[in-house]
Length: 346
Ligand code: GLO
Ligand code: MG
Image (tube, rainbow, N blue to C red; front, side, top):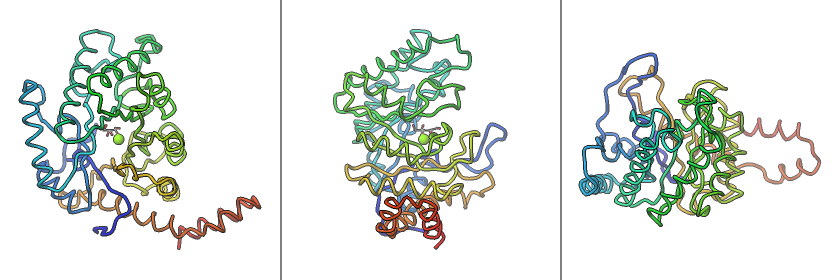
């Protein structure tokens, strides 16, 4: 189900093609080799790949700085050959034992130093891959035990860590990807509002924006389209992770539009109406295949999500703008609702 003439440029992460393991069950599909993932992504219609630092250079701790750069350059050649750009690098600050108490907000100084070092390496890798975008999903920056960390000091730690990254490389831009919970219970940066407040206390707010994931907004009880609008109004929406989510549960990363099509429509509409993508931004997906999918069918969530975005673009373009304007003036929002539902059903 390949989409030919696309409106947006699309990106996806290698973790979105996965073995189906979850906290309650082991892998049920074969691991797909990285090169095959690239091939599949290109075939489905993606333009770029999102990478964690150790997706780019596996066993990242085995190399000195110079070898790390050599490894990253090898990947750059592989991506060029596959016809895929690198959208961003995200330091994976949640798997290593040294990040078990958070990374930038860990209580122990040597653990915070590890987070700094790891972030610098991610920045070096990004440079070699031809991207200046660094995504910070602040996975474990929060608490389970409220008295375990000083929340005020933690906010300062986050700003200081971002400042050190901005100072380390003057070209990078940082995209904070907020999420209210999971794996941590209570995150210090749960929403887009918090992320932008953090941006404003850094040394260079012009270089710190956000990446909004639909499911993360939903987990915070916020409409993702409104979150996107809020960031767009401030020219801070530099990335999105489109997916879907059924209520306030665990992070489901469902295929885009599979739970709430009208909500999905409004995300596409707000992106389209505000020229998202005109400065090179990608429409990123962060979706997982259902555990029931077989090896051969474990790519459909990617193709389907991309297809749904493009179908919703068509729906947004064919909206009767005069009808919308008239209903806003006469405030007949019941009629507007009927029109919208009928339009989406049609
Ligand atoms: C998890 C996040 C995660 C990030 C990725 C890139 O909930 O959505 O998938 O998007 O690590 O930062
Ligand atoms: Mg995400």
